[in-house]
Amino acid sequence: MALAGFIANERHAKITIVTLVFLFGLFAWLTQQEWWDWGFPIFIGTMTAIGSFATSRRLSQTDQMLREQELKRQLATESERERIAQDLHDLLGQTLTMVALKSEVTEKLFEREPAQAKQEIVEIRKAAQVALKDVRDAVAGMNTTSLVAELKRARSILGSANIRFSMTGKLPTFNSQADRVVGLAFREAVTNIARHSNADQVTLKLDRDDKNNAISVLIFDNGQPHIIVEGSGLRGLRKRVSQLGGETEVGRTTFEKQTGFSISIHLPATLIVD
Image (cartoon, rainbow, N blue to C red):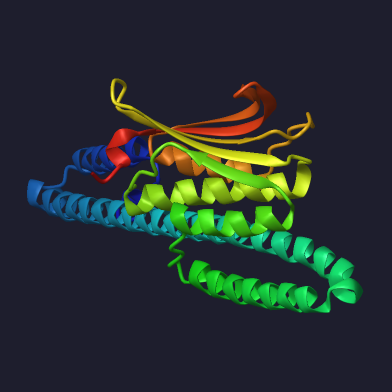
């Protein structure tokens, strides 16, 4: 009876307990035992089976709970790895692109304009210092990227690549989470433009649609057609924007009579802090 309570299948366990009680009762009847001779063993056996049954289910529940906790830990670890990987990609991609561009400029200026070359080297050192700080902040989960900060970075990296930058529309004040996501989106766009595009003009356009209670952020460059391959940067961007209830559109488009490439983000206006 004690072992019957530990049968994994609950239905089979109950059938086994009932069968044992029946067989013992039948044996006692066939051997013409007095009721107190067979009643007490059946009572003790039944209580033992019930106790074993309860213990077995409690152990099973504990084991299930431990497995669920382990799964949650694994998922949390994987999520944190993805976050760090995405942050490092977002943080270092643009900075390393800037360093590469400025290094090329420095090499050309080294003999003709040594003073300017020295200034470029100073800016490369500063960019490396900023990247180091950003990496430390990202690993610590304290990356405070914002759209304003990324605008400043963009002017520097686009200037190094001889690409003009302009902005239309009023710069909104997003809440901290949305500000970080939009800033990272702008960083990803600028990094891709500097790396892969032969554009000479980049435009940031911000539109607020009060009718639909939404805000749109368009990042456009007039580079020539090229194959669009979405890497981890764009995939991570789509994921971040969708978590805020927004949508991301990537592809060829026409803007102000120019054909080029654009990243368009549509977010709920509720993310703006008025």
